Image 1 (cartoon, rainbow, N blue to C red):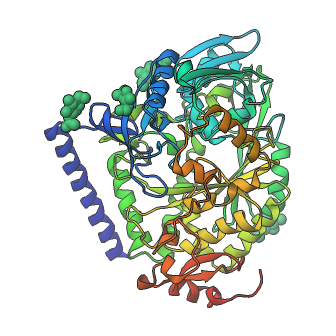
Image 2: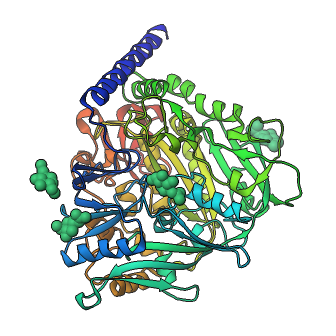
Image 3: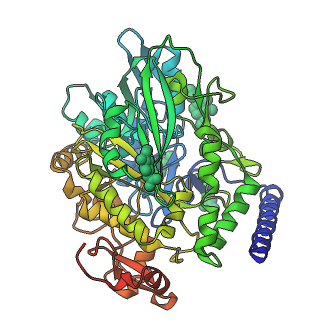
Length: 605
Ligand SMILES: *[C@@H]1O[C@H](CO)[C@@H](O)[C@H](O)[C@H]1NC(C)=O
Ligand SMILES: *[C@@H]1O[C@H](CO)[C@@H](O)[C@H](O)[C@H]1NC(C)=O
Ligand SMILES: *[C@@H]1O[C@H](CO)[C@@H](O)[C@H](O)[C@H]1NC(C)=O
Ligand SMILES: *[C@@H]1O[C@H](CO)[C@@H](O)[C@H](O)[C@H]1NC(C)=O
């Protein structure tokens, strides 16, 4: 134990040296990269695009010939027209680029990126009709505060406020609710202005205005960015309301039944399950009368500015545990830190914006629904404090899998995960360490690429190496959980999360995908806004999102079907899953031994 501690200290010291070196590079060379996901070699040309994590799911480098930063709709139309005229591909990128897959990367190597960074104004608020129109680059946090200033509330949203409305809609992002229209932001869209390619006779680009009754809105409100560049969005809001939140801890003996009912009990209910601890944190969260006293606030600790030095040091410690000397005992001990810290901080809830005194925390919707105070640091170089996952400092690096399973099938999935946990509980310490499996509720949607049925969205964040193909402890168990969700229980991947293989064939589970493609062909016949990746996701052109080759399954690029897809030289072989035996996962000999040789079993599951 002492030796281990020494190693961690040593790694922390190395972290200090890395920071010092970074500081010297930044300040002496005077070569700070500008904040934002697009970095160009020469002003606005010779660019590379990345996401906030500094790396897409497949680690591909995305190159673009140039970037434009339109500030008005007119400039947006001109930017689209210029790329159409030049017969180049184009994609819209957002302020921080929060998606894991390469959705924002233009096709080819000489495409154009249009950033919505400066398309971030509120266009109009009609308080009487409860309508709000914003430009597509408005950040969720700014949107909900502008709405509140007019006495209005967006009833549901993701919890992280550093996303733009355009990005939220492109990826179908949501909060948690089965009540009313449910938690997906696109359910509240009643109008859009979108810039699409046009013939030369019309100036190469036009603005299409889609009203509430326009069937094309069902395509545009979840579009993966392939229909055109969203200029403006009109949202139907509600009178500003308050909600009352309590987090309740329980054991997980009835989690499989509870997942089916919790969303019906509470308007904003969600569930965080820590399988190793056999613990569940239920969010008991409901709308209350605005007269209810309380000015509570949520400032989720993991979305606050984190001091950079400890962040880099803790990442180094985690790397050591996950990739080198770690044992299950050490990993499981470490896995208690974050959930314990979050619970100690009451998940960032305060009763008056300053301190927590007691549950329930009652507050206005805009102060509870989303947070992201760390974005304030994103304009800086991140040397003092930063967002936990800012790819520009060597902080936390993880995968984020998100898949939705029909509400009726969710209990069976949860029961399967519990069976897998029972075979080797320690394998779930990594999942516990990042606050477990988060379950959020989403309703069926008329959006062609929205959910076909009322669903539970399972979200899990887990360790990712900075090194390509590096083995991770118990990676086989994560992969089996994912494959169970996708292939046994009919799950569909979240468009903005996940690794490549998860999208393979996913589009076939959307009954209205054909309608979507028809609209795409009408709006953008030449596929100017499409890329190889978006075509693969949409099942166009017959190639798969999976990338098959040596070691592909170690990175989630493929499902293994041969040992060479794992890392046989490092002791990882392609094996059936332990509960879902049709799964194919990379297992180490150690993992197989720990579960009593279960890795070699091929009995039915
Ligand atoms: C940078 O761009 C300018 C003008 O667009 C051009 O004249 C110059 O040659 C470029 N430099 C490099 C290194 O590409
Ligand atoms: C980007 O490159 C294309 C093709 O060369 C050109 O038509 C367009 O004007 C360029 N845009 C900017 C803003 O430089
Ligand atoms: C738009 O974004 C910029 C930073 O990119 C910020 O300085 C400005 O205040 C924002 N404008 C609005 C209206 O939010
Ligand atoms: C779980 O909690 C319930 C009460 O909420 C209790 O009846 C049950 O015994 C507990 N199960 C375990 C395994 O602790």
